[in-house]
Image 1 (cartoon, rainbow, N blue to C red):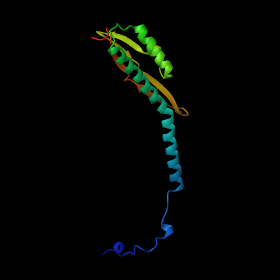
Image 2 (image 1 turned 45 degrees about the vertical axis):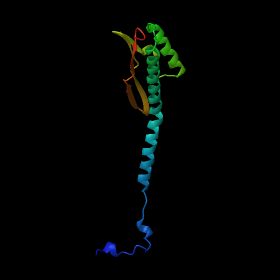
Image 3 (image 1 turned 120 degrees about the vertical axis):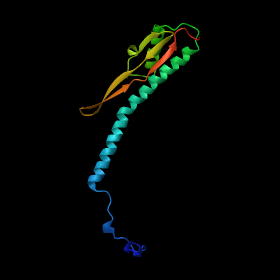
Length: 141
């Protein structure tokens, strides 16, 4: 048998051999945690607003999907503006939302970039490019 298996397991372990995290390790862990928390607090609201923009566009698509009337760009833009105002969307202005006519649909795109100051002169650029819905131009078909 080797020496490790012969060792008496009930004997107390010497305290001078037990060591925790060093001071440098603790400072590094605290700084890493603070950086992660800063990222969440600064970038989280941008992702929440993007989720709200996507939700607004999806609700408009559902609303007009079952409509029998012709959809007008002006009316659609006004509805988007009101909903952006109610939900306090500041990442993109409702006037920047593109509304283009395609064959039988209106294509509504609310794609945008957002620059957020992270730390000092370090900025993060977020690109939200998946905010697009198709609304039937002639209503329910």
